[in-house]
Length: 110
Image 1 (cartoon, one colour):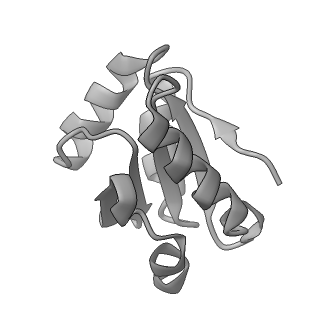
Image 2 (cartoon, one colour):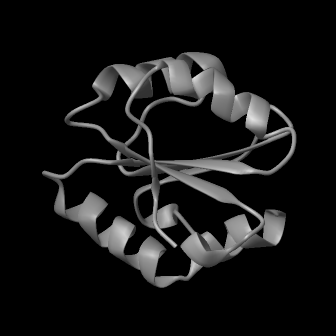
């Protein structure tokens, strides 16, 4: 399975609405940051992208920083990079950044 790409602020509300049916995860990634690259690699190798009980959204922060600001405004989760935010039924169920992002914790919540 591959990432769903988050590239437009209009997608955010649709994703939150979709979380009422299936948990949705935002993964914010900075392509210039080695820590973000390591977190992304570890996350992808975990197998979470193949989990049929969650939808994973990839956000390239260098290209779409404004989308991150909208996510922060909507979720009240302060922007970090890298960062994972899980939304279920319109509510934030999990958020972590840097080395604290744990795909096992996320999968245990869904």
